[in-house]
Image 1 (tube, rainbow, N blue to C red):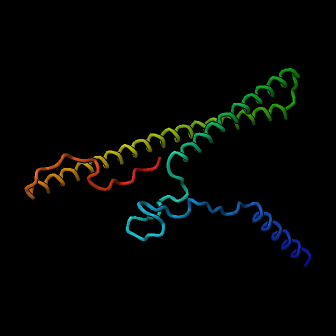
Image 2 (image 1 turned 60 degrees about the vertical axis):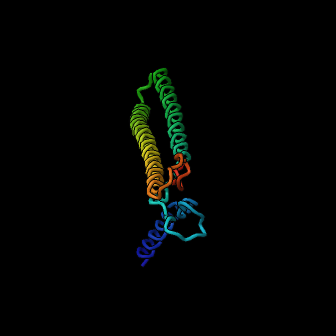
Image 3 (image 1 turned 90 degrees about the vertical axis):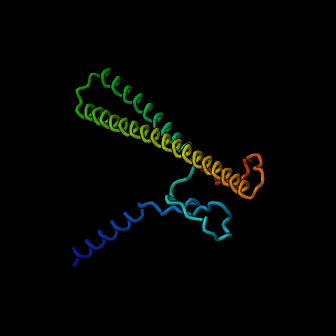
Length: 181
């Protein structure tokens, strides 16, 4: 009976410690659906939720990603400096201590892995910036094309009504909301 009780207590404590160490679910304002073209009180066909609610739109995301990249670079630079100091101290002592050698080797492997992760993050950030720039250019191109077609339709309608077409105006119709960057 005591073994069963000890096993039950051990399972309970391990489950409780695992539950206590897990992060709490975070609810952010970005989890609420965004409204495109109108306010949140209007229920129209143009309001829709974002397809990726965990991601903040625009420049704020880019700034956060660049800040994270810069913080990782500075952290790695300080870790490389620390590793250099550790090597110098080990060389100055001329110690044959296997624990010190293993510690240095562990640091070298860890920093090599973190350098690889930093390079992957840098490549991903550059690719994301390029993707966002191309997306913004496509939105602008589509907006210009829609405005041109609206001006042409307005001129054709005026010509069909027998009126002389007025000078094309830039306010021919409502412009779509440009992507927030």
